[in-house]
Length: 285
Image (tube, rainbow, N blue to C red; front, side, top):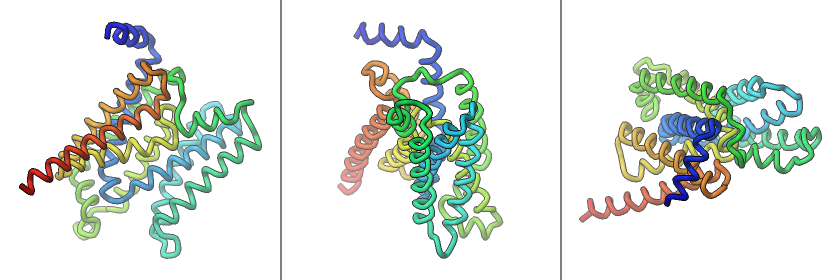
């Protein structure tokens, strides 16, 4: 036990480890808040689709040699979020088909570009690092912390100020439109903020694993709680705890950060599923 605390104390004496923990907790908090609404609206596929798009955009930025890759990745991912919502309402290209078309196309183009115009001698490592997150936490800088902090403030302010409208749009979109709420506008805002979270989380978790941060905490909370407010609060707590646990375990066990966080989320889902099953049986009795 003393060895564990000594190891953690040693690592957290370095700023980059603290940066990784702060960024991980902020990303987990933001993704969990929006995740509840996305899961209830059956929009969770957007997170998975946009993560593929972010990888394709990252490949374009790498090939073109842009120093600040956010200049390319963020606008392309946000634009894709808008296209997915628009084409999803098209009578010829319905929801899941539009996501598959845009996300798989972006993933294929990104991988093809990285092979045709390699930016390093180890393409496999570049692809794995982008898809599943960096195996090292040395890549995060102080600017990443400030960016995540600003993003978290925006998400929290948006969620608190428009909580009632998000609740209304989530459960009954037709009624929301009838009462004068711009449900299409709120859906678009949720999709855009989700795209921003995915782009920022790529360095920590990877483009293929980020959707798990959006889906797992919400599904875990729904196993036990039933009200929207309770599920949202529980989802946020689960996501933050699993992110912190995953980062600490990755340090102690020398495992990839992203995969460890998602594994912790999966473990939480199994635990809450068992609790939910036991509670259901007690209610029946």
